[in-house]
Image (cartoon, rainbow, N blue to C red):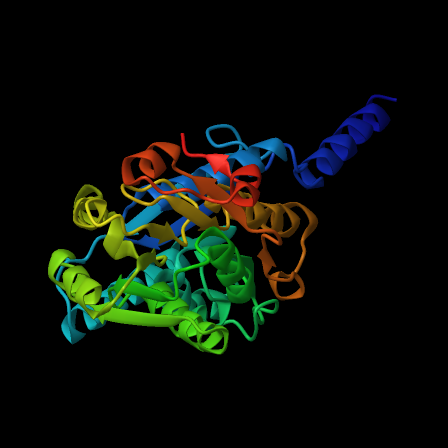
Length: 338
């Protein structure tokens, strides 16, 4: 009997040891990679983490996050800056592969575009977020990423954006855009020009280095006939504590030239914001991460997500300061800037 009892105990212990850990016992490790540090990216990551938390994946409990922020002299313009950033991203991607995390989150277009191949080739699932134009980040299309990765995009239907803009400012046909060589900004400017021309809209553009003041370029566009300014999704505007935004805001206040932001995130000077809520986009990406981590979903089988209806926000105090009247249809749809 003693031998039988001992055998039963030994067999039970062997079975217990062989059992896989439950999902509740597993600790997930996620590497986060981004280029430049800014408030919108923080907001996006907060949305990502909050959605993970609502699905039982909680930082400090069963989730370890390692965030890598590449801050490579972003104010230096030109070819060497781009080459340097490219090498830094690829180096970080190699380090991430060595860590073998359960998943990688890339925030923004450059981090996604230049890190994805090395990470995907290593068999590590990749989810991206805060990408304005999926194709610019290496996706097959707006809705299909490709093998080994997926994510959520800030993409907005340009025609819808222009329709809302025309409703808000029916008399304005000439828009100025000052932008840097930011991948998102370049893609958005191209789309705006393509979609706006058939609608009788003209876009006057000036490209600046990230170290440059916005004032000379903006003033030149005003002299060329810009009746309003569009602010694209561009890391340039968040630099030096939003200095370009503040400079533009001061420049256009007296002549009462409105600024319209394509980023649904408060910045100095814009009277109207039209776009995708970056917090929600982070949450959408987290939804895919949950399916990958918990359900074993293949990233390539998950569609690229986007916000279907554009969000609208109005800065009422800026409206009053510039003595601008917006149509009631816009005010009824819009949320007030906090």
